[in-house]
Amino acid sequence: MKKEIRTVKDQILQITTIDERWYARPTNDPATGLPTYQYVPSVTYITSFYPKGVAFYKWLANTGWNEAEALKNAGGDRGTKVHQALLELLDGKMVAMGASYVTGSTAGPAELSIEEYSGVMAFVAWWGSVIKETGFAPRVLNREFVVWHDAEGYAGTIDLLCEIYNPATKAWELWIMDFKTGQYVWPDMECQLSGYKAAFFTTALRRECRLAILQLGYQRNKASWKFTEVTDQYDLFLAAKRIWAKETEGEKLLRLRNEGFLNDQKSTKDVSAYDALKPNLNLYNAAS
Image 1 (cartoon, rainbow, N blue to C red):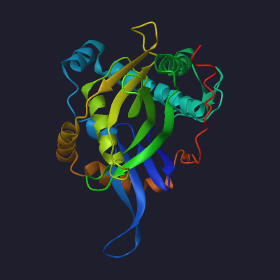
Image 2 (image 1 turned 30 degrees about the vertical axis):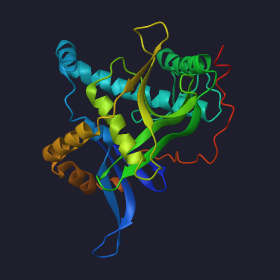
Image 3 (image 1 turned 135 degrees about the vertical axis):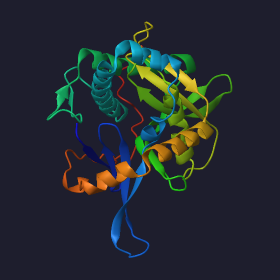
Image 4 (image 1 turned 180 degrees about the horizontal axis):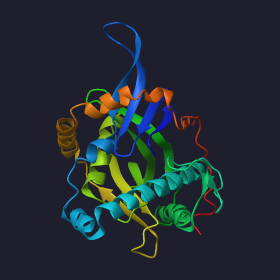
């Protein structure tokens, strides 16, 4: 994948290259009044500069750089297809084992592999476990939507915003969740959620909100999923943003502009249509 460009919402573009991701939205130049684009780094691009911890570097040393890059690229395609399948589930559609989805590195739609479909089934299992433990299905408020932090200058995509009933407090609690198809949760992944939360509450009415990573296709337990609540670490996210700014100094953004990426759109997809959530999600009797 050299470059992938997607229209995600209201003319907002998501630009992904091998090692970076940007968001862009149309605006007017304050000096000339002419149309232009405002570019900001993504949450994931910023947190890629956050230290991943000793465990990651041990894994990297044992795996080797080339193999680690191959695993990262394969994992990116796997995550893309699983995410698209989950969107269809949340939109009330059925996902067959032979369902096909487009990724940034494939010329056309590619079928879900057995491993990828297992990740989809793991989501169904998690959904059912919530029903069994609380007596209620999660209330989906939104899924895969862009949040933009004007003051700090970054943007990102939240996988799932939902409410989950807490039997102990007899209250519905707000959750921001991130889906992962890998086997590890590194420290930078936890910081991502803090960035999403801060950006979300720049436009939404502030309320208590919990953060979690849901690993799907998890191989270290029988459930095939792992739900990890993480604490808000926005101060660390801002520290990572300062490191990102120092290390990049705008050079990569300049390269994106010079490449004239708007004339080289490999793939575009409008994923903003979400007028009404369907109350009966087609997770085929997830409680069974």
